[in-house]
Structures are given as structure tokens and as C-alpha cells.
Length: 452
Ligand SMILES: [Zn+2]
Image 1 (cartoon, protein in one colour):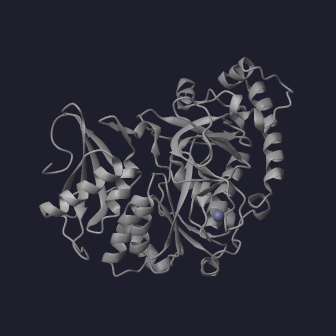
Image 2 (cartoon, helix red, strand yellow):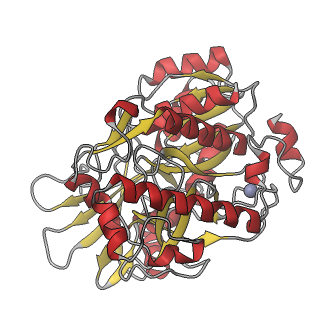
Image 3 (tube, helix red, strand yellow):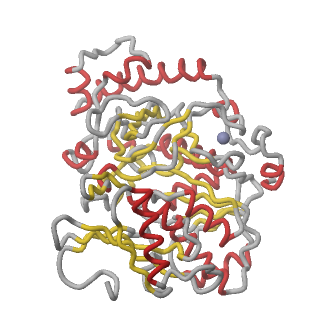
């Protein structure tokens, strides 16, 4: 079925999970979003707590005829609100209606917990089924799900979505790569779901085992920002269509948005359930479509933990142009970075993903890398630690000339000086489970990569 879809590129997608919602005309969807926003405001006011207080302060009363146009003037929420009311202070339903919790260890080290009613779990499964449909999955698919299972939303989110779709899910979770290779060989999955860094790891292991991964047609890779340059590397390594999936536990988990196989050019946001805005990270004011800003989500249908204008911290732009797949849902660009991950080097703002884009465009370098902010001196300097590829490298970056040529490209593209430190294959730490660490600060002690 996936072959059918990718071969007739330009024709509407045959694998939409909820075609009526996904292709809904914009005006009709706006009406639905307005109704749902009014309903949400009523539920938040009734539930009490900080969101209700802020709504009242903004002049919103129960029964007000709120519309979509009112959204930018409504109060925002942020991660701090979840921390301040930890664990369940933002619940909008009695605890007896909560059937599951998830969470994240959290950027910044503090845990964030989120809660789901039975209806929330159903919605989440539907959103993940839509994402799998975006990748061309059908009821006949076998989904090799290597996202971690547990408090992290990745594993169980995709798991429920695959079941909702009627596909066969292989709940392999993260790690134990040798066992994963065996399962891929024996069960011949067509869909792979994991972080992009684990896709690389698994791809290397499959190659070492003589490429038993040829059944894979598409992959949904998320939970980490990644670039088109990494997409090209993953597609080359695994021979599949590499697509981005986006989500965050505060909004629901994976399935907030996903790329379609037809265009692979931005992720369709399920905006009938999650209203999306892009705002200036400093002022909070909306930015025009096509301009990078912080994504802000409003969960209009979620019950247990509804959030009004939640600041995601993720930087991306929005695009409302028509898509060849036929979906009318707005698209978000790939996330270019976290608001908190932005590096300021010699007064220039740089996101780690921009460094990745330049590094991975260099054929002589392997896709594993680690960025080290050397803060032992002022001003800090950025060092990119990369591995060279043993085979197929047309130009060796280990020569002094090769290294300085890449450093020149980095300076030209980013506007700052980045030192390149090339190391033998296998030197950069790999991630077996969870999100890859791509950025570390070195302020004292031993270097994070040998020989630095
Ligand atoms: Zn599309």
C-alpha cells in the first residue's frame, strides 16, 4: 500500500486515517475550532486553578462568545505552571476519571507529569493512527516500535496508535539492538518508529548483519530535533522514507503533528484538536506564517489536563499552503531548536540543528556528532566533535586542509567560528535508549570526547 502512495506522488493520500477531519475545508475547521475553544474556556473556568484565574483577569467570563480571533489575547501557560502545581494541580477532572499518567524527566531535570482520561487515551491513539497513516501505514502494516516504553510518551503513544489503525505493533522499545535486528529480520516490518539517532544506530547494526531491514518502507522519527541532512543519511542507510513526527507530553505526546509521505515538507498539525500559533519567543506576539517562532498549543478537546496557549519552547515556522497529499491541516517546519538550546556565540544566535545541517552535508563525516560548548574561557567557543567515515569518503577530513575547509563552511553558513575536532568511528557516545545527547557544556575537568 505504501508503494502505491509513494509511486503516485502528487495524488491525494490513500492512507488517511480520518479523511474527513484531515481534509476539512479551512472555514469549516475554523468554525469547529471556535466552538471547541469556547467549550475549553468554560471547562477551565469551571475547574478553577491558575488557568481560570488568568482567564478571569483577561476579562473572560463563563458563557462568553469567544472565537478563534480572541486566541492571541488569551493568557498563556508554560512548563513552570506544571512544576508549580506538581503533580496534579492543573487537573480539570476528578482524579477518579484519570486512567493513566505519563511524564518526562524534563529539560532542566525537573519531572513533568501529565494525566489522561479514557477519552484522552482514545484521542491520543487516533492522533498517532493519523501520523502512521501519514507515513503510509495501513491495517496490514507491521510497526517496529523502538521508542522507549514507560513514563515517556513515545512508546505507548505509537503503540496505541498502531492498534487503533489495526496494524500489528512490535513493542520492542529502546535498546538491546541485537534483538531488534533479529526481530526486523524475522517479522519483516514495513514501518519503523524511533528517535532519529536510534534509527542511525539500528541502521548501522542492520548493515553489519547483512541488511535484513529491506522490508522497511517508512519511518516516523521524532522526540529530537533533526535536519533534512540527517534525513538523507537515514534514508541512505535504511533504504526507507524518513519522516518527522512531533509531539510533547504536555500537549498529548507523539501525534501532535506528522509529515506526510507525499510531500515530506513540514508536519501536518492536528489542529482540529491542537490549535497552533507561532509567537516571538521574547515578546509572545504572533509572527507571520513562514517566520520562525515559538510554537504555542491549545488543547481544545483534551479533558484531564487541558492547556490554554501552552508555550512549547520549540522553534519552528507555520505554513498554510495546500499540500499535495490533500490534507488541509497547517504544516509546521521541522523544529530548528529549543528556545533554551539557542547558543549565543560572539553575539550571534545559533541553534545546534543549524550546525548539524552543515556537518551532515559533508560526505566525509559520519552522522554521529557531539557539540561541545567550551565554557572554560570567556567568551565560550563551540567545538564540533565528528567521526570520519571509513568507507566511501571522497575526501579525508583528517588532513589539516580538509578540516579547515569544513570550518570555513561553518563560519560562512553560521556567521561564527566553530572548531572541528575529527575523531575515529565509534568515539562519539551512542544512545541506546531515549534522546541522544548532542550538546554538552565543558566548564571544568576532563574533556567530554577523548583528545579534545
Ligand atoms: Zn501533506
